[in-house]
Image (cartoon, rainbow, N blue to C red; front, top):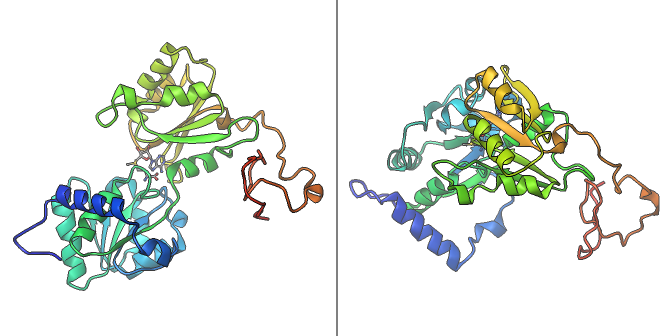
Length: 311
Ligand SMILES: C[S@@+](CC[C@H](N)C(=O)[O-])C[C@H]1O[C@@H](n2cnc3c(N)ncnc32)[C@H](O)[C@@H]1O
């Protein structure tokens, strides 16, 4: 529990929670489904921007909230105006854990309904779990409410799929090297090298030209398609489509330096795919087909369990 005047250091709280998690699984994993309303502070995904892309669960939680701590400029103010009319709204920008944790904890312990609102989905580059661990360590329960991540909004804008039969069998969510990732931890070139991966780069708008230069230096085909979708689903959304060889200059001309999703790979164009196994010979597949839950391309996994198709 909180101990006024004797604040827990967030890093010790994170370490303690990590240790606890390593020792035993959290019982709540088996008690709740994603989407259940639970006790505590929900960490809600706001979606990519358009208020209509917030989940129904997220909307209901926001409408009930007294305090909403949100992710600043990446959360559309229209969404806050529409759903947080009765709540105090506070941006987390410029606040460290030492400020954020007591802010949420004290409001919660005073009986307020508190929501922590992240952009997109909190599980992707959201730094949500460190806040949750610090709160849990202080006796405040927390849980995730998923949202639409920006890569999915960008693929909808581009009218394509991130996985495409015979074109892209895998998707990588990644970020470029910089303050957080060392050059050794930057795997963009390896994903591109694999050929059938759609690479979605978060937090990389400012680094597109450098990233493309590195790909060219590594010998990748300059004609590989690249799209940059700025503010996917916002009223000022902007779409730039080019190739590894051209996108740096195209983006430079647009002036965008942040808040864009960069997608590399042939899936960007949606061209060249083959019809899927799923909708081919459907009537003849029988109950023993081995492509579990496959709505995609039917690439059969030999080890898959018995089929439980989604249609
Ligand atoms: C801190 S990360 C948060 C990602 C977020 N949790 C998500 O799931 O989309 C911020 C990065 O997400 C991407 N991003 C967030 N919202 C976006 C949008 N509406 N359109 C394009 N990219 C977006 C940008 O790459 C931005 O630099």
